[in-house]
Figure 1 (spheres, rainbow, N blue to C red):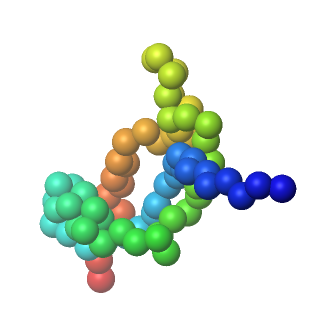
Figure 2: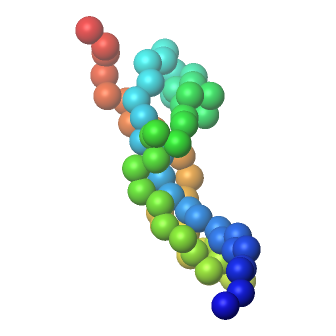
Length: 71
């Protein structure tokens, strides 16, 4: 039996709610606040992409939704 060191790409999603005045502020606050505890889903991949095929789960970019005023 041999010991192997394996590094594998992972892709996933983090979900968090932040209070901000604008979408841009919400994006910045999320990037500055996110931690491993916010990871909602992740999966191990053979590779992120090959040619023009992306193997990462969607969404493939930040999605921001305005949930309305905070009381």
